[in-house]
Length: 114
Image (cartoon, rainbow, N blue to C red; front, side, top):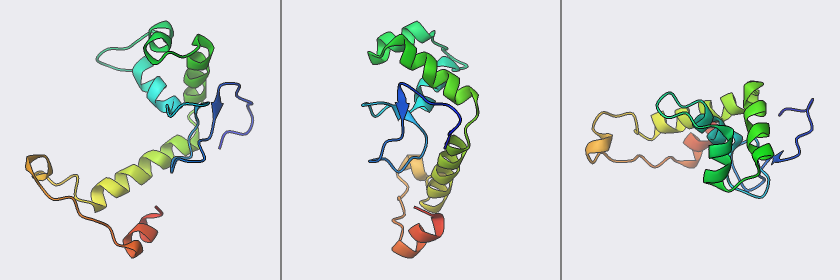
């Protein structure tokens, strides 16, 4: 995790499987905030994001700054999600048309690191 910077508004969420940082006291990842800021379709200003999430503007700016450091925990969380989606069949072309979600055995979960 990012250890060179002390974040005032960001912290790990011990109740989450994700290792990336969250807005303190909220279930909002810094990456979610950053995604709204960097959206190709409808980018939002930090002020708009703060208003939309009912967050202090400084928390939004801090989340953006954190994500701009390209922390390895965000990449690791994303890669784990990709492995889960692949293993459960969510990439099957028929999945959205009523395809079945594959339940993972404890052995498969352990192999995927979840």
